Length: 342
Image (tube, rainbow, N blue to C red):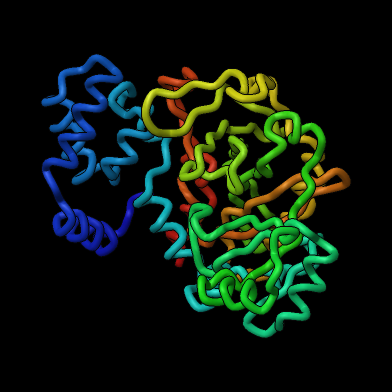
């Protein structure tokens, strides 16, 4: 797929405004240290790729483009390509349901399988009653990304409920949820974090197509996102790991989980068929937003939907960590074709 001239012009203008040679040189020197390449040719290649190959500097670094041929690079998604797909396929007004976690919980309530309340409307007594049923609560800022607005509280430590309610509201942590209990198989990897699966789907009007599947692993924090120390591995169409895990940044390779010792390369997502069946139904719920990155947890008895992202997030393998030299771009062919008909 060729990105439209207008979209590319906007992208190049944005890159020009934010261009900082020191930052790009930092990526080039980091790549030089990690991969034993001279930084000047890497810098030149990065600039060329940004200008003519729809590849941001961070994409170039995270996907190990310095180690790949041009043909291999062409199989990888980039931030610009993904953003272009999301903007072209998804209705911006309808996508607001995915931007706000309270709106999302309301729209997809039957797939959540957990209790929740909104402190914008729920008072002190409702919060205390909720905590009596669920002594450990998850508090979320409704509009946030990368796990930065997610917090965990043990309410056994709360003595003044009016003050606790007011504190949560003042911090914007108004979405209160029941903690998710994950499948025992996933708990073996990291019991202190719910290890979620990012599954990007495209609904073409008839069929829900899984495109990209990444299994995330936590390190004991409230979130398994990179900002909390997490890492991921890619899964195949059967929910099985295709290689070691990595963070996507810096030198990292996890054949086993660094804390539990459980095998990453032998990982098989439990209840895989059930997860796909749930998303086949959920992805049809708002057809005006057909291209979505879903976060799914696997509970003891079935899958649980956490959230959906109308800009799915870029997940690709790193050849330096996995040896895999191809990306997920061919899986997006139907979506690219549909963009071309609009």
